Image 1: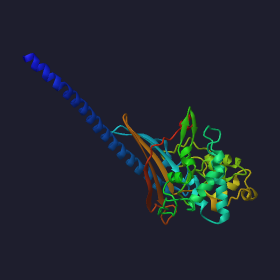
Image 2: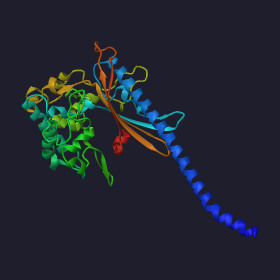
Image 3: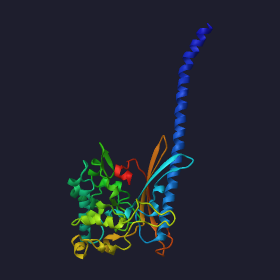
Image 4: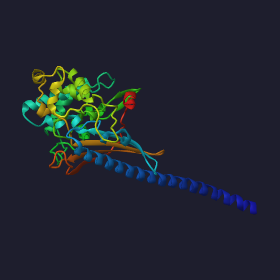
Amino acid sequence: MALLVVLLLAAVLIPFVSEFVFQTDVESRTALNVKEQLAIDNAIEGQYQIVVARIEYDAIGNEYDSYNDPWNADELLDREEPGISVRLRTRVADEQGKLPLRKLAEGSTEEQAIWKARLIELLKRFRRDTRFDASGLAEELADEMVRFFKGENRGQVPKPSTVNGSPVLTLDDLHFASEQFARHKLLEDVREEGDIGYGLWRYVTIYGTGRVNLNTADQVVLESIFLKDPTIAERIIERRDGAAEDGEVDPDTGETPGNPFTDVNQINEIEGVNQQVLRANNVVLARDFDVKSNFFSMRISGSTENTRREELYVMERVPGTDPNGPVEGVRHLLCQERTDRVEESAEDVDE
């Protein structure tokens, strides 16, 4: 009789105990995940403040910005937060090193046409020689983007109220301009069987003054501006990099290596560049170029052994009255969680 009672109790208790153990394990893992997410969030926010402080301080040193500046130092961009085992990777981008989409709807009709032609050239080039080449869509996309920025094909999408009057809040809004952006994943990086197609987020921007920083512009951006003489782009990059040592910054002096442009007119020192060439490419140096920037974006990823999170920040460095003095402050323009991955080739990692 006693054995029968034990067997009956076991039959009742075993499922209960199993469920209890399972539930305890789930709650334990959930608690650990919440703990790590909080640690990652705090680490990412702290990293953002550190980089912002570097960018603010850098304004005191000189009147130009390049990727060899202290805010882009290797030891800052790839590090582990001590005590909480969070690995932080940061990618800082000068937004004024990209093609300014705001120019599609600003300035004279002639200027808008010039920037549209540059956009078409960029769309033809940015994924060239990859399986993700979208050059056949270039003119269609440019037409739709112009209409969207002018408010002509927004449909039910209201025009947002933004600090700089931009008709979009983020680049993701371009998905409303044309279904091709989502269909071909044009805005984000993509990878297939080892082949990488970089996203438009690397080359175009909705922020900035409308002038492109000669010291940070990607080769694709420069080729799109000098669309009749694209080889000038490579010579600009060779000139500005000069004796740069893989982006390293002197830890004692904080000096920027390389040979950055300190004045837009220095572009005339490059072989093959003269007033005739500039006119042929519809380039007006004071209108189209700059050597500094106050608009920066950061993609900061934090990861542990169990979880990962990535945030995109955009900030504006507000200059003070003294060009070589402290800045007035910082204006935070965007904080957005990202789920798309930043793809890197072997060459990117080596650099």
